[in-house]
Length: 303
Image 1: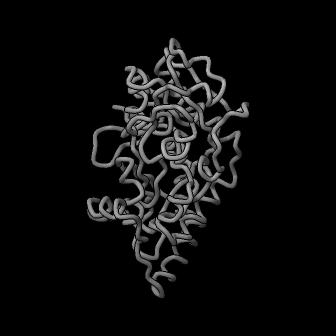
Image 2: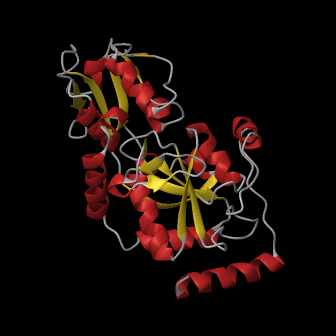
């Protein structure tokens, strides 16, 4: 453990002797999800501590959200073992998690978790942090604390190359189309309702499911962020990008809604400070370069 890490841990242990913090509450749906979480792991955060006292950074992600994260059968291209599985995780989130762990002088442990279980996982201290392409929305910020951003995203759409909407130049051109996005995302909750005249279908349970809905013709278009779209274009050559960011007829979103952050338990100021310290030494160009690296090795089957 390096000197910075020893200093952080010493301060945390002293604080833990004088004050105890409990996990932050949330909505009823999040609370029920938290109740279904497995018992706190030996590497999980105790109340009032950062969770790094054991020398391990335990990070949750879907491992099914390329190019942010995905599952693969081996350790090629720097993939990391998934706890309790024979598979490995890779992607932009894994690259960032490895960098953070290295800078903090701790080991990295990756936990695979469903999208809806990510927030409850940090609230219950089952994991130390979530690095999973989460946008830093005000609603999420009421439930967890965020370090970052660790990526600056933009909102785009995807459609099929042979679609009547393939030449769309703005949101108005999607009137009459059917669309969807991943459940519990800014794409579905905030962006899709801005498309007047579009028929919004039920939200997809995951990013791969969202893309499959488009590929199979269940919907005419999907709404997502640029990295997810870029990864999809590599996996599905028959899809085309609809980028309205240079148009006056584009989605209206707050930067906090689209910038991607690293979440942790409310009140875990030491871990937030430590991770923010690592990210402070990186630029948007650094983030983009690492994302391009992830996209270049993304398995085609992960789409």
